[in-house]
Amino acid sequence: MKKEFDFFIDVRNEDCPVPMIKVDIVSRILDKGELLKVATNNESSYQNIKNLISNKASLTLVSQVRNNEDYLLYIKRI
Image 1 (cartoon, rainbow, N blue to C red):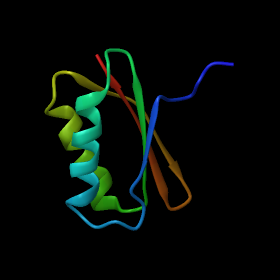
Image 2 (image 1 turned 180 degrees about the horizontal axis):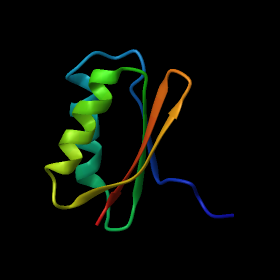
Image 3 (image 1 turned 90 degrees about the vertical axis):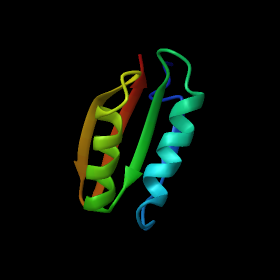
């Protein structure tokens, strides 16, 4: 069975800038091709994480899903 992701960060109910800092730290240890799943329920954190990813040439947003109050982001090291 194939893994859905390599790392998971749950930053639900955490205020900015904590979610963005956690994503930045974990993204630095990803190897090429590894996938990070992030869960947040804060619109502002969601937007800030997307902006962080768009400013890093080594990362790409593979998928984003809205699930009730939660935002799920799948980030890949390229």
